[in-house]
Amino acid sequence: MARQNKLLSFPLRLPQELDRLFDEIIHRPWGIPGELLEWNPSIDLYETPQAFVLEADLPGVKGDDVKVEVEGSDLIVQGRRYFERNHNRARFHYQERCCGEFMRRITLPESVDKDRIEANFKDGVLKVTLPKIKQTGKKP
Image 1: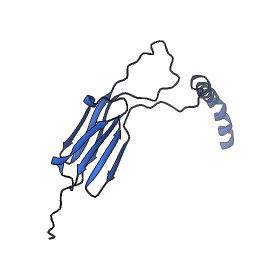
Image 2: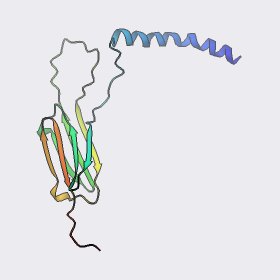
Image 3: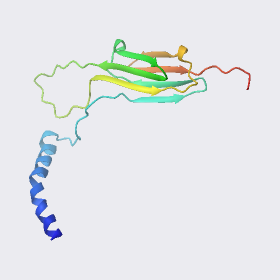
């Protein structure tokens, strides 16, 4: 009986599978998978002897649309990317470049000197330098 159920269930799913294949072949001929729902910029976070450094890729973002702030023990990077849509007659086959608001929240280590944090934005890359608290020569 279980074998019969499996055989009977296959034809019932065939129309859905055909729809999916049709969509893949006709509407997305390049075989690119589904859509991206929201944009979350890629970041790198690394450490040097003097500081932690965060770098974020923000292509297409204007410097005025980026905000870097410290809230409690968190570093918050937020902003917005706008795209001008001049494709009113174009039919998109696939759209991966997202726009809209973004926010990244990173918990800072206690060793960060929050008063000396610096942020620079150049060529679509945000670089936030998080200096470490200077250690005195005394050991407890």
